[in-house]
Length: 147
Image 1 (spheres, rainbow, N blue to C red):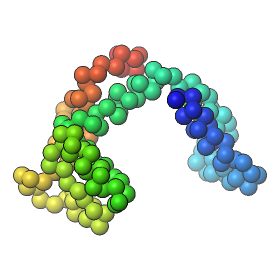
Image 2: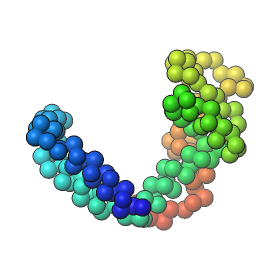
Image 3: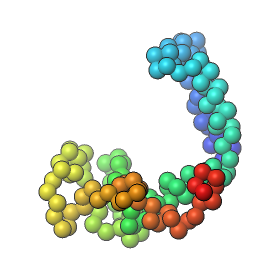
Image 4: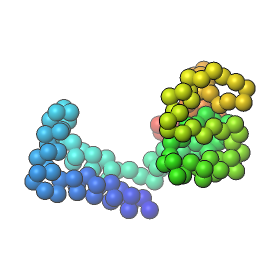
């Protein structure tokens, strides 16, 4: 569960410094990016401090609304998964989904709007135009961040 996920993240951080060359390269990149020398230690402590409540907060705030048919959503996936991802959302109530192949991405969002096309959503006052949150609002998150 959660502890395995935290251990996996920690391993990814640590494994990138497994040799002297990797560690030196990592320190050079940190210096170039302006990060402090103990940034990894800080990040590991933050990962260690993640609680189940933090995970639930993130799920409610960011993930639940992805599966609401009234929210606005753009999904990217490998070409071989396009049909299965499209069918998944259609079977869960989404309508007017538009499959856009990679070579058509540029024109997909600048084309003239017609009644049967899906276009970028209008901005919702007081909300992010991409995360209106109508569906997620029914799940009242009571964590200190949201109160």
